[in-house]
Image (tube, rainbow, N blue to C red; front, side):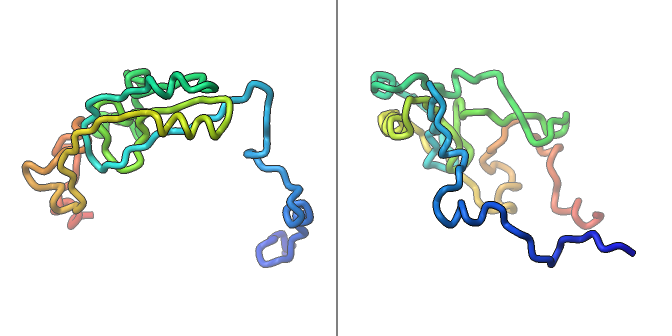
Length: 165
């Protein structure tokens, strides 16, 4: 039988010299004319209502080309799986509330990465922190905070379901 596997065999690295000498090109090294740099402002809270987003100061910063928030992307929904049982309720950017630390709240496009970062620092977001739950058993209790309003108890699993699996 012919041996075709490369697993466990030495492989000649054609890019080793350029990587070792700093000459390799990566996507972050690519600069195109009129290229913009995007950065996303992320939530510091696990669960909070967005009261207000003020982008005024950031919009006035020279080099800022565009700023969008969840209000600009309303109506767009996605999910890993979109079914009647698990409807799509993910947002490109949070609209009315954030559901996890790091959820995107606003996006900036600017003429340089430094300008985009500076613009993020000028965006003011007012939050009302909401109760968060970090334990699966607590999350299944009656009255527990709901992170995804469209997912009903009928669409989730009860602990008893796992015994028959």
